[in-house]
Image 1 (spheres, rainbow, N blue to C red):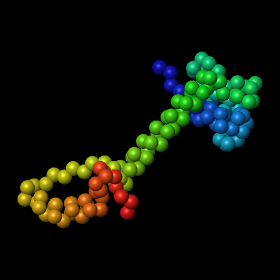
Image 2 (image 1 turned 90 degrees about the vertical axis):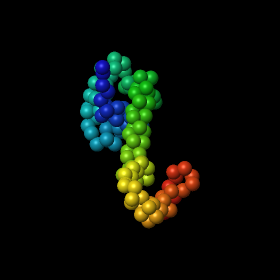
Image 3 (image 1 turned 120 degrees about the horizontal axis):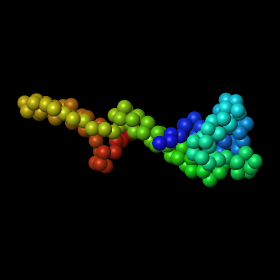
Image 4 (image 1 turned 135 degrees about the vertical axis):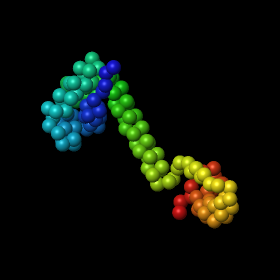
Length: 131
């Protein structure tokens, strides 16, 4: 199974955004030869050109557009996962399990759990109010 080089996909994305190899390299703070070399390796790994060196108006080929869709979806998925992890870390979502002996349940409910419920629970099925 082939694996796509994430750095090469990042360079292809920069080429698409900035329109030229030199501009993309400048924005990425790398040498243009480095960008060109990684894009060549990407082309060799998929067996198709990803950018047209002679067309400055539309430098990205159809295969390049497919890779850009994949790269941008991958970035969006990563951002979504990090956002969910942040929500777990900040206690904005997740689950709470309580294990307690029968004799202590009244103390738990009457004090701690009721104050927590008053702060965090709303009748909107789990949506937490902004405090």
